[in-house]
Image (cartoon, rainbow, N blue to C red):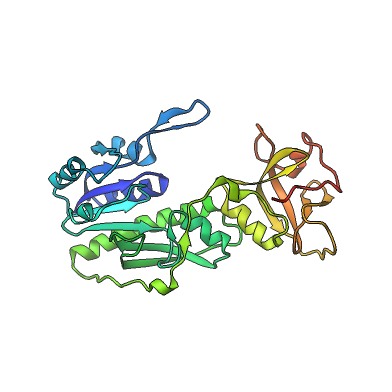
Length: 312
């Protein structure tokens, strides 16, 4: 099929690679403008742009798709479909109507649960047992279109946002190939979403990653996994911001301990009292340092039993 591809991060680049492997004709790749990144804050092309350049695919980086000029460029491509994956721009109805078969979105949740910008992280935060991929026929709503295919994925006890992202990127690539094949043979029908069961996956902000030690150990362990690798859960100890990359819930009974208090320290973990239970911190990072296992972290940071992390 003749495809316009719209996406930006690694999640989307996986799908673009799959389209190319299946010999679909990708006539253009739409992606976000280059952004400053790294310590030098140099302008860096998105993973989708890098993948497109490798395969000699024309790249388009419009600031908006609402202009007549951008829409005419898309219409001139005479595509069968547009495949969208974590693109980052709103597609107006005038754009949704351009491809012959419309625009298909690869969404990283089992819709209508977790519509919005951060479905992977919100699923982990909520303690969901599973998530998945939904291929959706796009409309003007926020992830409200007809569902063409769902693929399920268990959320393992040690999944972080990064590991779950990687699993769903592979699943999403598989799913879009299956849907395009079914569209070609006209063997697929869309299913309407039940909006009464919808939940909203709000965009992540750094402030929400600050640890509130009055929450239960289980809630905090889920948050630490959800915010890994970004924005990373953090707390303040002795006026120093400490990032927490890995922790596990302790089975030990804790009574009348002040939330945030250091209860135990050894080479494997630092035990911290929570609103309910306690948390074993295992991988930490101090400012300008690297994430380190506790045994190495404590060699370069002063911490002792009785110290207390601040709670927001």
